[in-house]
Length: 70
Image 1 (spheres, rainbow, N blue to C red):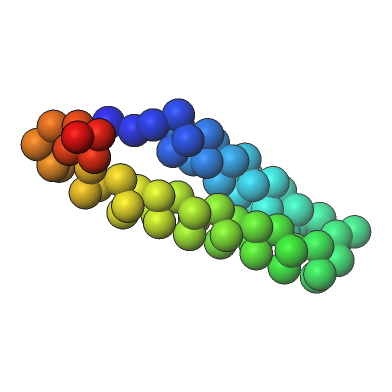
Image 2 (cartoon, rainbow, N blue to C red; image 1 turned 180 degrees about the vertical axis):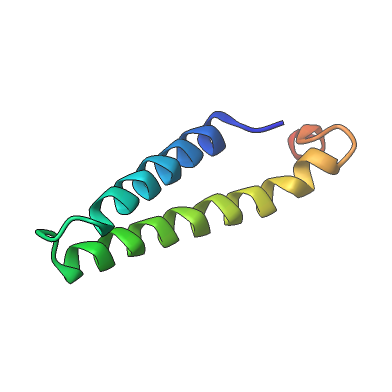
């Protein structure tokens, strides 16, 4: 089970990784551009993992978020 947020961040990670792989072999791309793209990929991976870890509590808890509304 994954949320729309997780799906969209996953898509962004895949797109950025694909872009990085294509740019890696391009001689016209500067090192700073590659480093910037790698930084974006790492940030997206951290966002994805943090969200996933935080939501696991609610996904496993009986009743999900129902207890928060009482």
